Length: 414
Image (cartoon, rainbow, N blue to C red; front, top):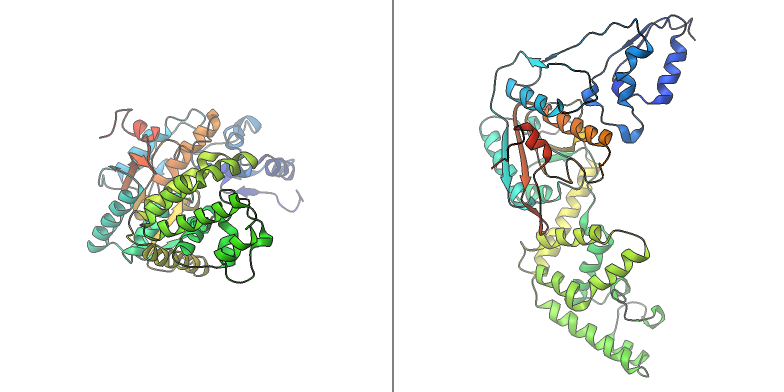
């Protein structure tokens, strides 16, 4: 093999893992004619096994290697490059370099504080509309985020205002989660539905001790249920209460219905037991409900909410089927998916603690990787970069990301 390949060139070297490096070192023997290209500041695949320290230690493994620093950014404006540099310079384990650019100063990086994700989505929508009106093609606009669940509010707002968009990754559908399906089943039954599948979903959430063998095939009859349990008064009382609850829910707004199902019907008690039994974090499940509540506030009737859910689900299905790079549409993607791409205008949303950096990043090397991800996201912008953060999310107070503090020398952003 060494006789066949006298020279070996490796691109994206910052993403190499240990096994790959060991193989390359063997292939390069005995001449060690290796030419590697990489940017240690863009190593963001540790979760796949990438080890940026391999690139940082390359000169120790090959003392005769010559290093050439490519320190010119040909993509971004001086304002973007300067801001991104102030963030990435906080990392200790990196090659020290002073990135410059030949481009103009450009607009300052804009930081926007908003109340919550829904307000953030409308702010981004308005700014995109202004950019398009000023001549920017939608395909030259990107909205970036740390995790693939962040853009839910954004997607719903874009759909509502008919803003064309494309997504590089799958967005988990909140309404197809078992919690979302449970609440929809309750409300369908409240509106008069008697589907057996819906009833089986909710009959013991919370536990009412209703057995599957008591449930007729086809449509559900509460009268038949009462007859089945006629010798158990306490069971008849539970069935009566469920029917009363459904009548109450039928007269409510979607938001009020969710609150009622949680507190009065007892769904929160079921969820607590569910989390304990499956050793899951209750907070993560409650977060899903709070997010659903926030979106439900915008609808006056359950029927309107159902129509929205149907439209939203269909749009996600179409996104998965027609995913392409050729549409003249705004791009929505995670920091990871954006690597290697560039856009005239970039929005980074959700610049909050526990989001970016992600809440599970605890070790120093994990935090440095989070910072590299933020740096990668910032440097996708050619001309305009806007970063937004929220004050609260699903009823919880949120802090701005530490990276914004680093961006402005740790001064609070107002």
